[in-house]
Length: 251
Image: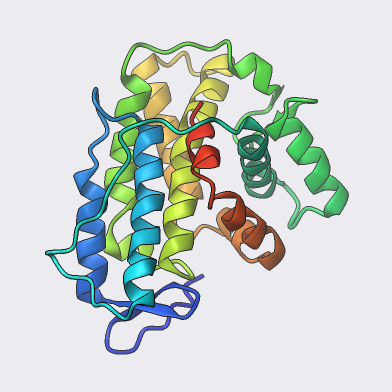
């Protein structure tokens, strides 16, 4: 999956802009400084991550080398929500990642967005034999803080130089990991709804976390189904230019 330009340890940030190994490490340190917890939700961290990527692009556009002294601003206040765009993003990813027979065709994609994004019909997750509807998953509850901890753990493991450098470019990698983190509650709710193994909440969420980590690693064949489709990847990245979309996929 990695089509990064690696010459003297440089990595494609996005478009024509590149980062050195040192710059990538600094950027990942800034990502890690946004700690998910009581004062910062996963959704606000996601917005902050997108802002940091845009700020990095601004620096590179000005031909400025990113250094420790440079300030990257996160997000403290929630932006307006845009559930329409958020549902399209969720539907796109779940359709491509959970499709069982190679690549979905156009009508399968539209149907998948309607099912997994807008809840118009049921959809299926590979490890779960039953088809589920989004409306059913919204009714599933977990012990307070357990999902937030899993999302914090996911970000801590996913936003590292050795992981992000495996994507086509750093921006795409960060954006994909943001979506993956937002889908942890979806997979957890699906597992709890069926719960064939009679697991408790802690083990259910841990299993959901592992499912997302596998699906959203740079080497994941499931994720490659989506990122290899230039048209849909471009649509996704354009939707993610709106902070309201980024925040809303966590709603």
